[in-house]
Length: 318
Image (cartoon, rainbow, N blue to C red; front, side, top):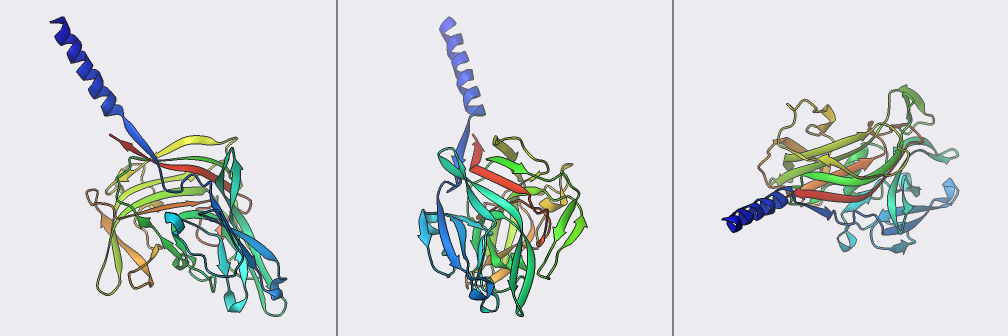
């Protein structure tokens, strides 16, 4: 009888351990330890300087004014760093840089004012918020109109994580002001608080015969960085919630279905992704992870804010 009791207790302990077990997996290239540096020679009208642009990817150096080829060695990440050539004038914009951390690196995102001046020809000031995302940046950028149409958001992904985990540190101003600068010669101060953000969208996508791309939202995770940290916050987790979260008490409007996501269809054309609703049971086909030092619309942000992230991982309960 005593042996039977001990066996029963052992079985209970085994079940308990497995119920609480979890698997933590690095998202591909999510340690941000490897970077490619691109040296972009700006046009002589802008002074002819050489600008360094950083891409998450294989350790490499590129010394050509040409579009970057994303997806090397399976790297799913892109950044807001961009090679632009409006009106044939080459320029580089750098808002994301590698930050040394221990034996590796983290991704550091900056909120800056980009100024482009050529006497008698062009005079632009643009607020730019650094971002890191799964997908591609479409280069060369020819204008400052509709910036989201230059970002091919999302990569194939079929798993169903329970949490998104990462390390972060940030400098977020307490001031209730931010800068708006969309390409005019000057900038404007507005009232409001800019915050860093991270969000994850799991989607089930499909394409019709005309090249239109649709999706159901399967899972959602999001977080806003609204104050500075004194040091790195490690192993921070945000839950992935499945299905329609609009009726949940902590739902935020920015977590809902989006109208500013663009993707490249099977014909190679950039089109607006049409999110048609929610489906908790659908199998994910794509994942969007978007991390930015700012959460305001394009060309709006608090200049000087900084967000660093590292060690992007997925947590699966078993």
